[in-house]
Each structure stands twice: as C-alpha cells, then as structure tokens.
Image 1 (tube, rainbow, N blue to C red):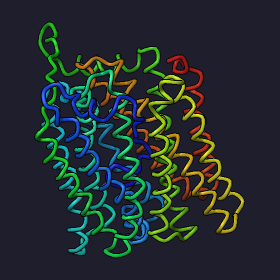
Image 2: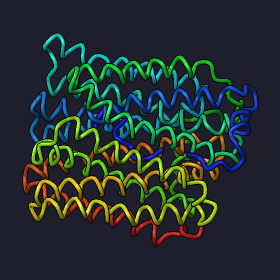
Image 3: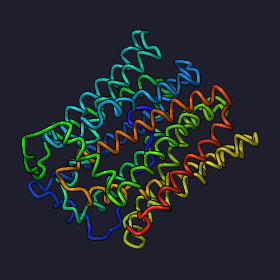
Image 4: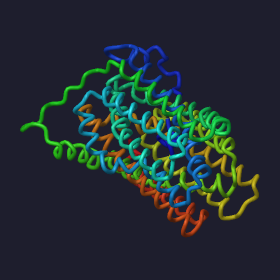
Length: 429
C-alpha cells in the first residue's frame, strides 16, 4: 500500500570488487553509480510511504476494510490497462527519457496528496484517483528501469548489479520504516508522504544524466505494428520453458502478497492496535532480514543456481504467513502475537532478498535486449493486475469473514505459487 508498496526485495558479496562494477557502463563509467543512487533515494522514499500510507488510510481517513482494499488496489489497476502498451513503447523510445518522465509523474501525483489534505479536501476517492495516476506513471517507470540496467552493465554482471540494488533497497527497508514511523508521529501521515514525492523528483534529476549503451532493434518486415510487438513480448514470456512457469508463479505470488499486506494493515493497526512507530519497526525488521538475504544472493545463485534459489524462496513464503494466520486464529497474547509477527516478516524479508536478485538477473539474461521492455511490462502488467485483485479480494473477504479466515486463504495462495515453481524446470536453471 503506497508509493510502490513494501517490496521485501532488493549486498553484493565482495566477489570481483566495487571498482569493476563502477566501471561497467560502456559509454559512461558514472552511469551505473548514478542509476544506483537514484534507486537508493527512491527506495528510501518508498519505505517511508510503506508506513505512512496505511496509517493515512486506516487511521486518518478511517477507511472500511473494503475501502482499504480499493486504495491498495488503485495503484495496480493501470498495469492491467497500460502494461502491455508500456512495454512496446519502452522498447521503442529512449528508456532514460521514459524513466525521467515517469518519475516526475509519480512525484507530482504523490505530492498532491498532502496538498489536498492541507486544503481539507482529501477523501478516499480523491486518494484513489491520485494513486491511479501514480500507477499509470509507474507502469512506464518500472518497465523502463528493468530494461535499462542491461544497457548500463554487461550481462555477465547483472546478478551483481541486481544484488547491489537489492542491498540498498534492503537498507532502505531497514531504516526507512523506522524513519517513516517517526515522521508520521511528528508530522502526520500526509506530510510524511511529501518526502517520497520529493525522492521521485530527485530520481528524475539523476536519471536524466545517464549514458546507456545504445540498443538497435531490427525493423520488422512491413514496419512497426503495436499488436505484433505486444504479441512478441507475450509469446516470449509464456512460451519460454522456464520463464513461463516463473511468470505464472510470480503472478500468483503477487495475488497472495497484496492480499496479505492488505489484511496485515488491518490486523496490525486496528486489531492489535500497533502504533505507527511500531508498525514502522515491523517493516524495518523485514528490511534487515532482506539485507542479509540480498548479501547472500550472489553466493546462493552460484552454489545452487538461480532457479533453485527462487524455488526455495517460494516454498518458504507460505510458512511465514502461516505464523501470522496462527496468531490470528488462536487469539494469542499481545507479546506472543508481536513475536510471531516480527519473526514472520523477518523470514519473508530474508527469502525475498535472497530471491530477487537471482530472479531479475535470470530474466534479464535470457531475454534479448530488444524484448526486455515488453517482457518486463508483460510480467509486471500481469503481476500488478493480480496484486489489484488480491487487494480487492482481501478487503471484501475481511469484511465478510474476518481477519483470521482471510489469512488462512492467503497461506493457501502462497503455497500454490510455491508448488508451481517447484514442479517446473526452474529447479534445474
């Protein structure tokens, strides 16, 4: 919920050294460090929003469970409408330019939230409208970002580059929520969101100076066709022997994760009555665990293979959420509930950090440059569509049957995602 949502994903083991990565960009040695800095600043802003947005929705605006689900889904809906289209144009247009304008759009749409609040004009549905605008910009931004990295570093270094991005993202998830909880307590949730808005504008200023390696896509016979280009990205994603099951498992994971985070906000902030500061610490613990997982990601990828790392992570996620469901089912004491909640989020964070660099590097390695935008957008479009459905379904399910049964259903969906990965060729990658 919020400006990108808590990711639990994104260090590098010192294998090859820092200087090799810094000099990896073919045309401009500063390109990857600049890209890395932009991602770091944005990650810290997003980590603050991960705390501020649920507090704004649940406590400041007093949303019902259904409204919480709608708000959580709003930023994902544009992926269903624009995702495939964004992939085509990211492969056609300069990716740095797309990322710059997407960052500006996200900064402006998020920045309008505290402005409306100060004018006493912020309502649930105006918030939904702004998050729809935010999500529309994010569709293009994420497709451009994931496709841009292979133009900044050699493919042989993609695992290390992704691990390094994961390292700073995990560091942001560690410090950002604590900072966010403090800022929410000091300034209020709406004003805390303004910092994330500023982070996107700073990201745009850094990205505009990147000098990526040029990618030339062969012109298709008969000229360009939007329908054909979309089809090429979809076919590559869902006909590839191991990329296809990875995509499907990830779609199901996003359904479960969005539902889980929606129910978690209601369970922690309303039922357990966690303060914004303690809620922030919860995500900070997940960030520390993610940092540890990201540190081990390159080593794990070399030892086990990227596919096995992904499979193991997907099997562990339902275990973490089963602990949260058990707390809700047994009406555990406050101390037991807090221990279980923190342990579960730490486990989720660790396997997320372990998995993400391996997953991203694998996808970027097997996909040709000319298809990267469309492949990334195809997967992200489906992922975020499933996330929107998960958030909406969670809101309605909590309203209908309560928190505990909803959490049990979430565990089952996470288990399905794990089974799809386990039974696929991914374990041999």
